Structures are given as structure tokens and as C-alpha cells.
Image 1: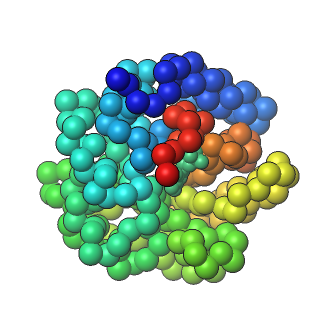
Image 2: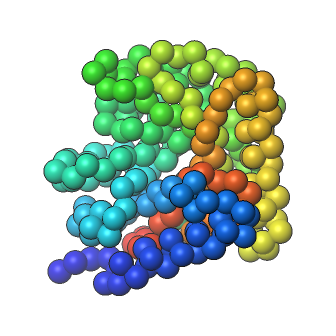
Length: 232
Ligand SMILES: *Cc1c(COP(=O)(O)O)cnc(C)c1O
């Protein structure tokens, strides 16, 4: 029996349609936003069904669980993103198996990912996670420390610094959602004004991806809206 939603094709279409409408509201091309399907807690067969719906980018948060799915889906040409928090002693498998890492927030982790990225692979794409609110439990670097971290990561040889990522506080009010994403975009533009050449704003999840797109997200990380509530 297929676990996960039976109406996955319709759900994918509905999310894509909402993304396109948000892009249109902001005068943006819908093609400028990538849908990253976050499949943590979903079994490999659900990932396979999502790939059959045309999804190509998949995000995972827990390394052990992710590696099992990567193995089970080796026959598919999927692009895997590690979106979870990174323990410094677990960087090797991430460097070897993923194409993107979204939540880099320490130079130590970045340096290990660079050193451990296999030489036959293209550089590992990385985003720096910024902690916008004062939420001690969340990862991310403080905005004030971002420029120094960005400069240090940019010169690591086996990484390609692509952009910024955030997981802001959950907000039900649209205007408050916008304010967080606008802040990440401001930081992104400030780095680019300083010569950083970043092209990726990884922001927006099921509850707020439309606001994120209206504020310039180039990648939205969507789980629940595609796959339904995660099993506890
Ligand atoms: C789980 C997760 C998501 C997806 O969250 P949903 O609300 O289910 O869309 C996105 N980004 C990160 C970093 C996550 O851990």
C-alpha cells in the first residue's frame, strides 16, 4: 500500500499554482522559484511518487533517515538538499552524498564540508542560515556576524556559496511573515552589494511560502502542504 497522500499529483499541482500566483503578484517569473520538496519523515516510496509527479529537488533534515532514502532511490536522478542542523561529526556523509546544504552557520562545519567534499564531485552548494529572531533553540548565525562568515565560506575551495536561508518564527499574520523575509532579502542584497554574487534565497515553508516568494525567495522548502502532516 502506498503511504502518504493518495492525491499527491493534485497536491503538487496546487502548490505549484499557489507559487505561480505569488510570483505573478510580485511581477516575477514562476520559473525563478524552485520547489524543494521536504520529505523528512516520509518513506522512500512517497519520495518516488513525488518524483513521478515531476519533482526533482528533495530536502531532508535527519542524516540517518536521509541516507536510507538516498540509497533506496539511487536509480532516480534527484537532487538532494540537506536542510537540517548539521553536527560537526556528521559532515562527511553530507559532503559525499548531497548536492546542497542549506543550514550552514559555523565556519568549522563549512571547513569540514569543504575538506570532505570528494574531488570527483562538483563543489557543494551551500546557503548560510541566518537567525533573524532571538530564538535560542534555533540554528543560524546572527545577522551581525554574517558578513564575516560569508567571506570565510566563500573562499573554501570545495564549496560554492549560493545564498542565505532562514526559518523565521511561525507567524499567522501575513504582514509579519513578509517582514522576516524582507529582512533576509535585505541581508542578501547587502552581501551582493559587497561583491558576494549570491543567487539563492532559501525561504518559505508550507505556512508562509507565498509571502516568501513575494519577497524574493528563489527556493521554497515545502513539506506538509505536499505530503500532509508528518507522522509524530
Ligand atoms: C521540515 C522543514 C521544512 C518543511 O516544513 P513544512 O512546514 O512541513 O513545509 C522546511 N525547512 C526546514 C528546514 C524543515 O526542517
